[in-house]
Length: 294
Image 1 (cartoon, rainbow, N blue to C red):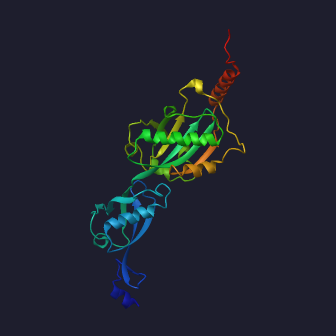
Image 2 (image 1 turned 60 degrees about the vertical axis):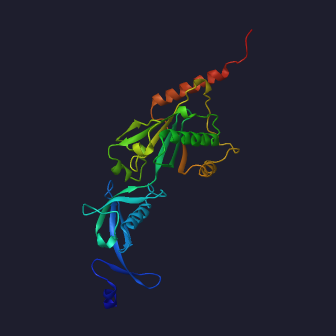
Image 3 (image 1 turned 120 degrees about the horizontal axis):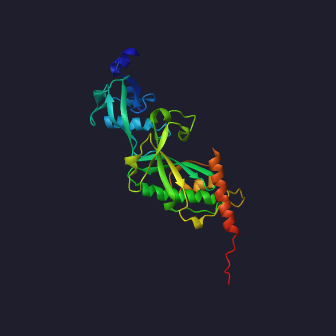
């Protein structure tokens, strides 16, 4: 058997795989890591006669096991390097890579999953979800989509409040070490201490401001037209649809996942006082008579 395998090409650089037709194929097995996160290593097996572009595709395919990259369009490796040497875009794998070698790469795709955290302070709700958007769209386009999603979720909770695009302010989270923080899967990136926020502006493109590590957005809601404010409280009425129903409906229009709607926990007395003040002002307005006095 050993002699047969050696005749087929088995050596220290290749191992043999019999395809469905029983034909021996020379395979190469390599490990790869994405440059920003060297601790996360994937294993890729390819035919040594395949092209280097196919290897880049297979690396992207393997990276989909991480939620950050799952379901992205045209996901692939770029800037593929072997022992600090940049590999060409054309050529066969076996001419440049041996089995057991370790490669490094960057990752590219047409779109990205953004992790959105919506602070509905007026009604003490937190809405969170991920939305997949193209790198080429503007922040203004994203803002339009988020407005529609937020209003739909609030309607599900029977909140008589509707926001406009001008009521939404977007900020991105900036971490001291985003690669290290992203590997802590036991907590939300929103809970990471060493972070700050940076403003996002309407004319900016997603690809210029956000990437796979820095993909976290805080959405702050504030009604600009104060006379339109009506304080509503989330209701569990049997007539309202569930968050799951809303999620199913939204996914028909928007590529979103991991939708959560939770009550906001007030962290200090200033927030409690501020919320009470808004509620009292709203109640006073509701008690005022709107009739004309002659």
